[in-house]
Image 1: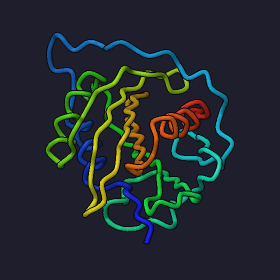
Image 2: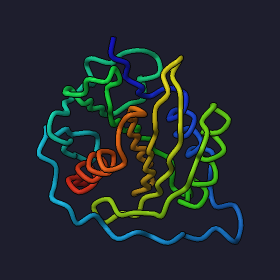
Image 3: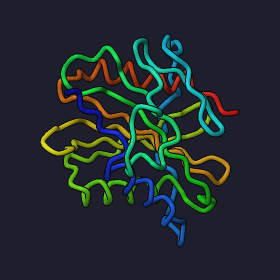
Image 4: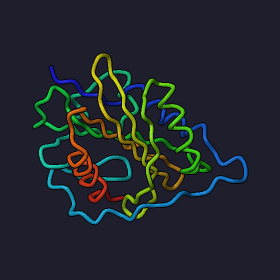
Length: 194
């Protein structure tokens, strides 16, 4: 049985943290931003969400109608790697939430690290920010677990026009850093706001 970690407690809690975070005082500043991805856009299927679209890596397909349950109720889009054969379907999902007008990336980074740890994640790291179609994005990684299945999480937090987009990549522990980077780059370099 192939397992897919989708919108489990880690991303739901992290996404909920966005709605509670705001710049309530001085000292919240943007961190350094990594340059925008320069790789070629993805070669896989294109998926359209609410206000955006992106393409997945080759072999990844839309899985919105295949993944169900309470934890996926807030998921706007989801793609899975259909060619993955290690028992864990690598995937990306996006949770979109409105009402993030005063939220800052600094607040998101602090809250997401706290929320991920409280949900049982370990090795939580805030990485340098990146660009997603011209919009700065926070990048947080962690080791996570769904039941007995350990996996790796890479989350991008994007704030745009009062809306937050939590883009969560879940990868098998056997996935190499190069494979993870390729999948993330495929999505971020093909991302387009509509």
